[in-house]
Image 1 (cartoon, rainbow, N blue to C red):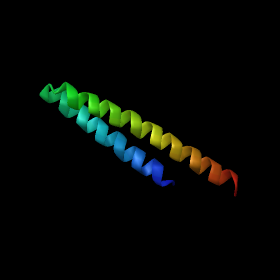
Image 2: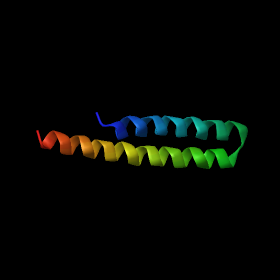
Image 3: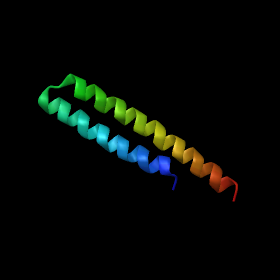
Length: 59
């Protein structure tokens, strides 16, 4: 498993938590940061998946 997939998944979870805290507290800035973190985490996870697929194809 590629390092980017692990970091992307962690960033996605972090974003989900920040977004939820922002909703509960009414902090729209934190909500937006959470959404941005989730999106960045999904992209990073996808990049890691592509790296894994390329590595597996070369085997």
